[in-house]
Structures are given as C-alpha cells and as structure tokens.
Image (cartoon, rainbow, N blue to C red):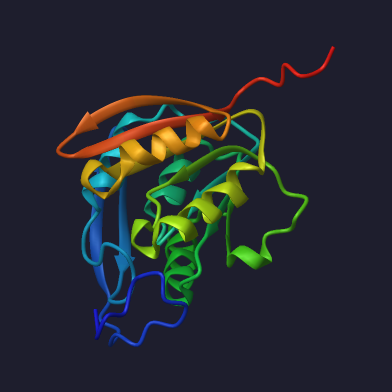
Length: 206
C-alpha cells in the first residue's frame, strides 16, 4: 500500500488493480475479486482461512455480521452456508464495500447487505459476529470497535474472532473476559488464535 496507507483507510489512494482469488474450504468454492487498498489483496488471508475452517456452521436464519468485511470472503461463505439468514457485511473502506457488493451480485448472494458502519440501523441485533479484526488500528480503537458491535449481539449470540498471537490475541482474550464475556479458544495454529466470545448470563436479577 502507498505511503503508510492502511486497509482501514476510508478512501484508498492505491492504484486499482483487480485480481481474482479462488476460495476453497470445507464445502464451499468461490471466485472473488480483490483489489489494491483492501485487506488481503490477491489471497485469502491465513487468519481468515483458519477462522472459516474452525467456526461452527452459522444459524440457518437470523441476522449475522461480518465485521471488517474487506472484499467479502467471510460474508459470502456465510451466505452459502445460511441462505435464509441476513448477512451484514460492514467496513469503513469504500473500495472494500464496492468489491463486496460486486462479489455478492456476481454470486447471486441476495442475502448479503453491504454497508458502512454508520449505515447499519441501530435496531439491528446479531445472532453471530465474525471478524478478522483490524488490529493495526491500535489497542484503544480496537477495543472501542469490538465493544460497539459485541454489545449488539442477541442473547445467546456468539462472536468468532481470529488474531495473531504476536499481535495481542491473548491479551485481548483477557480484556474480553474482564469485561464480562466468556472466551473460549477454539483453535491455535501457525501463530493464530480463533476465539469464541459470548456474553456471560445475567445473574444480577432475583
């Protein structure tokens, strides 16, 4: 990427050079268009690959969230697994949103809704959240991001996160637990952790 520009930049300046990546995992095969200025250009990121190979199949219906959707790998796999569900694909990167929209249309995934964070109605709640989060935004912005969206999980909902150990996955798990979430490590491989996060039951009521 150009001069310090990150994939979570709203309007990437990197020169557009689309290419296609073939995603093949479990029972899904997809060809997806990627581009410069968007996370994991020309590939399926190893963390995302591990996440999708680890998580349980999503609920058959309901509302799910791909947070930081990039070109749409997670959202579009979820859409194949749960065609009756509504998948929100959310990113701040406008080029990523355009790619995700293009890939969804190309694959006929009519249950995918592509949106900037501020365009997701406040009333929407999620049965599942899936993310390879933008760790490089910094610790405090990452915590704020996760707090905002984890608070929108429905009772009984789960969030599945993948992070590199050397970028703070274990300290993030401790922070989430201290905030009142149950955190389970589902898998650890090649320096990545896949975490299952859900809210602790409310035991404060009589």
